[in-house]
Length: 159
Image (tube, rainbow, N blue to C red):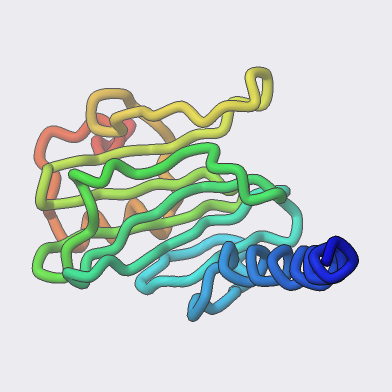
């Protein structure tokens, strides 16, 4: 009897371990290389020169939410579940060459820069309309085209 239980345990453990690894993955999400640029859909975006990736998931209501993860998929920053990107409103999500994330969400009038601090190894959140920051050129042009932000420090000319 004990030999049978021992054999079942020996056979069961590897199967359990394998199913755990399979279920902890990100099923259905495409892996995409991205040096910099806009993100419009769900997927896992990685920069070959950075040790981080951006996970963008679509929720049941069709809205999108993102998280920045390290190479071991530990979450370094996660967007608030209360401020997801709705398919019914304007939003823009941009990743620069340093894997800093810039976004504007019109639902919540939320202009944010998620900047990686190399000293602390932590992402810091900055409101780029309150603080004057150097926006990535393509992201800046997108915001200017939409004319969605008034009195935004980072969009004011340097004159």
